Length: 105
Length: 105
DNA sequence: CATTTAATAAACCAACTAGTTAAGTATTTT
DNA sequence: AAAATACTTAACTAGTTGGTTTATTAAATG
Image (cartoon, rainbow over all chains, first blue to last red):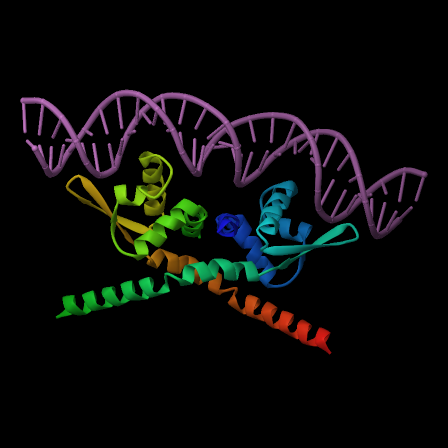
């Protein structure tokens, strides 16, 4: 799905993941989001826009401030895609466990 | 984590996700992986390299062929990161359900 | 009304990405 | 030994990304 392109791409940047993690604590203004980062405010604005385009957050305009909230449902889209592989990684873990048990003998 | 950068980035391309899905059916040679795509073989090789660099697959050289296998444990790394948000998307679903129930009244 | 604050827009840059084609290197097959 | 197969490497291109600075718009405050 094309949606997954923009979601995974948005998640592939540490600054953006940090923004999302900040939003777990609750709503934040754009300027508050920018504060912890060692980069210009327009740069952070761009990151927020990428997250917004991926549907990972919603922006609400209130007066002259913009308030951002998490939209975790888009993360579920990514998570659901990954879930298809779950049986493979548990299986691989089992393989490893079995291997270790065999080696121990 | 920096690891997440390369994992999510590798997953953000449809061709690469299709390669991973192909590998769910089992091991495949590089040339077999390339076949279904309308692009040159070196292009597919590059995609495979990106997946390899992200640790999402392993390559085993056998004679003149390369055989690729899924390494799903790296997907678990991505999945685990997303799992932190799980409570948010179920909560948002509940909010939606509650909203719909309220509207119905 | 003038100033400050919050944020966007525009123009630019360096680095990276996803593709191409052409040439080269191992390894197998005949 | 020659030819075919399975790749890799290299050089190139167009478009995208992540950052910058400067200027602009819009809203709140003195």
